[in-house]
Image (cartoon, rainbow, N blue to C red; front, side):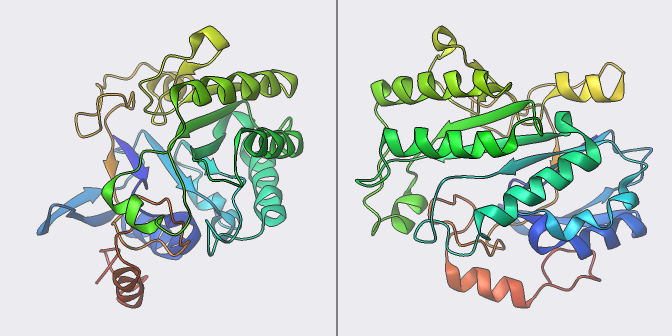
Length: 286
């Protein structure tokens, strides 16, 4: 079993104590996001969990207790974007999260810390030149601390459109995607990393970028040294290449306040859920 921790919220940043408590207890309860009264029990023993994939913008709260993960294989999908407080309201300052990235990479190795620069969106201020400039600035600081960078372009779903209505954000055109990807690929090669796309229909192999898998069977097989028997995740959109996993997160619980977020619907619901969190509970919320 592959454990996703989590596409739905930032567990390392906000709920790391709860997660470590769940490992000690050996199980977690997870609500079905479509049917909240349907609860599943997920066993977390090392004999059952093949790999844990963490998703975070700030895993600093986990770093001092990584020894508690010694019986598990795991890696991090670590997001560092070029956005300011107008777009990412409560994400820590870039200097701090870059230093945390370096510390994490030094502890577990560059293969197991994947830099995510996503989603890429455009505003009047944040055009192609803006993204290329700050992508290179971050890449320069992370050089040698990671092998892979994942990029994606924003999809303006109804809930993200509502959150972004005051920012004048828009999706890049096909030509803008190609232009930006070409320049990013050149920068990536300069700093010794490979770029992959996440859940994108656009073909960018002609500029040196292949489709990637965030929950990546090839990477996990390499880390474990064994062959996995696992198929594509049927719960993800068709462009997504991820293999099957069990996600233990819950929507409307992340406190980063990113306006492009697809996992938070209402700020009031996030605040209410945060109050209802108990680090000793087998459920993330309640």
